[in-house]
Image 1 (cartoon, rainbow, N blue to C red):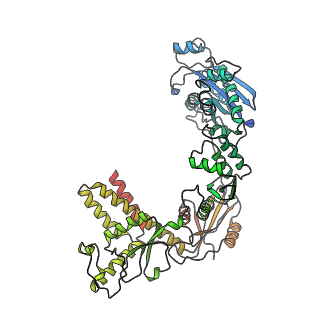
Image 2: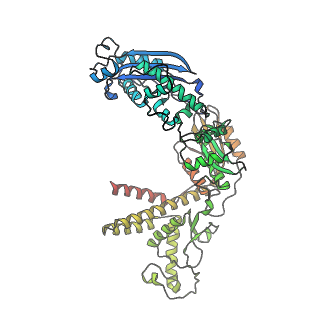
Image 3: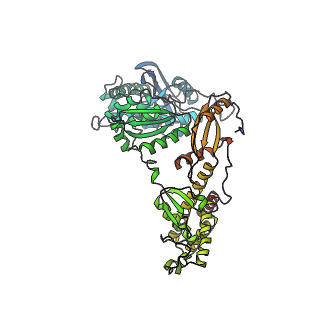
Length: 592
């Protein structure tokens, strides 16, 4: 099979400059913007503990009167920063009484335009710490924006929030800086002056870090996520993340007996697993799972799609007790138009290889969805609802549905059976090629109900129609993907290529080529070693339905390029997707 669209190496380049509100704006303060995903040891973090004194107004008023800061790393003070600031506005009397800072005190002090750049330079590359950090950070962000600096702190630790999480209820009467400083015997007493308060906050921070260090908290990320809701036993389990790869893939929590408890997927396995031992994981059942877990097994994957597919397959195979979704794909049901002289809609466990004999399928789906679709189709096509098998010579008395015009009564035989077969053909077309007839019939009913001001019933029918179109659309798309045979597609990512081989709707292989390198050898090797997949016998793809949906979603993304395909890949002109779009547009118009 020849490649229809050869790939070429790609290189990404970017240029970034300062964001300036005007040509006279000051230069951008550049600093690190992200942290190591696998955790930053506290001993290597440079903290800048800052405190501001202000005029007491809103941050947007830029009423900063004093900035004080202390830079520390590993418990050692690296430097201090202190300056008064002339706010260019009167200082209220009550603020002067509280802080001792008056208009005369700041008369000769530098303006904010001079003081702020000096502080930002001092704090560059640091994690900022403040007591009631939202207040101080609000003033600093507004000031930076007003002066044209594109500034965002590396990270922020709020010692108020941190102390509430660390200290048991009742240990201190409140979490004011003065209370905590006295409780931890800080070397400096807070006095509503910036540098003194920053020094006191340093001692409070170190005391809190000592507390959490005793239960194994050793990284900045753990400090930021720390919460008293997490038990010490749960935190001690964090060693399960040690040695895990910081790469995309699947992770499996297992108990002492080797039973899989939970399967998850992440772009960074180590980083994601670590969150199960912090406050960022708030699901009760996950705390129960972690208590039972004794190991975590990583499965590194070449691409995000491969990881998502492996997760689905493992959940379906092992049925971990703490996974809620995708555990029982075999419970999905198919709505089938049966193969018999008078076909009917029947809910079946599997789709068979009888499309050529006249069968049609929608699914898999829940029983509730099947009931809704039956009702929708019954509104458009008068199919029988009885379960008896009728032959060409059947002749019975018609039931009440036939008298109401809701069934073509094939049981009466003769011409009625011929008419009924036409109705069955229409149902088959609606399920496999063109949903327009069903959509039109249900929309007429919705219009009638709305005209009679029976709006709740109309909304119910709209929801059922949406269910029909959604499942018909997915069934048609999966079937088309399975019939396409082998599909090879690629997406440019980070200067390289993500490549997938899909065979009959199943992911058969995944690979990633290095940035700036010709991807064709990787592509050819992947196609040669990809899993051999047998064509499906029925309308379903050779994979879990959810897997086919993941593949279809990836194929539809911008940038994904079709490299090779073995068969035609086409949807019917009257595909359900068309009616879904039309219905969405009409619904939006009604809401508007």
